[in-house]
Length: 312
Ligand code: NAD
Ligand code: MLT
Image (cartoon, rainbow, N blue to C red; front, top):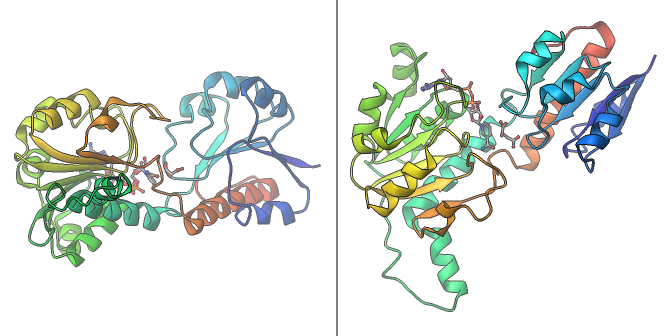
């Protein structure tokens, strides 16, 4: 019997090649569908592969009677209703490390761009100005980077920050003294990280416990002139509080790859000259997209073959 895989977000063509080559697997590319059309395409689907655009809601899951596997070509599964999937016995798989390097590199790019005002200076040049006064930056060397969430990406960012000769202090509830020592980072409480850091970068998932964790109280505990980077998830930083903290001069700048509602074109934070942003590009490299698509494709092939996955 044929195993039907619907792909509803653009995935790397090289990454889904194993699915195309697998016996008894049929692929249905449904990247240009609205919700009603997607539900129609899901009527006889065994698997659904998504990136972050498709909202895999309870309603969608309920209306996909044959669905057995949902694959997320990336880390965060916050666009999938896990409770609804679990109740139906649907396996949800992700690609936990296929984009770690890309997300860490993007974070470092944002950190350096923020420190040296690179996007703003380029915009100014494009506007015909030769302004060398406005864009005086700050060095990273001997500054303290605070990392909240020292998992895969946080740890990679820590390595790279050490290469910039930064001091690194990190908070993660699962961080052991041994791991901190191995990574060469100081272990701190959240409050210690907030108080000591010149730059703060967030690398936690969006959970009930992390939603708005960087709020007005948190900003009040930070150094004056702190700079914030968020390449994890929108919703972890309280955006109104960040806006106020920048306008009041508490926060000198923010580099944001994610905001709570995406697309975030027109968001008031983008009007502030101290803010630089990218449209959720952390994992958007050829290498990462190929890698995450291969990971979920291999899981689907394994499930179609023997009913199990490598990474449930
Ligand atoms: P990971 O699971 O390896 O690490 C997350 C870490 O956060 C864990 O070590 C966990 O213990 C820690 N954590 C959980 N709750 C915390 C809290 N309250 N305070 C401090 N730490 C806490 O995940 P990862 O691969 O490092 O990815 C992190 C997040 O980055 C993902 O969940 C995803 O949302 C996001 N991400 C974004 C992009 C992008 O394109 N911008 C790309 C990849 C991942
Ligand atoms: C992720 O969680 O992996 C990221 O959001 C990357 C993405 O899919 O764009």
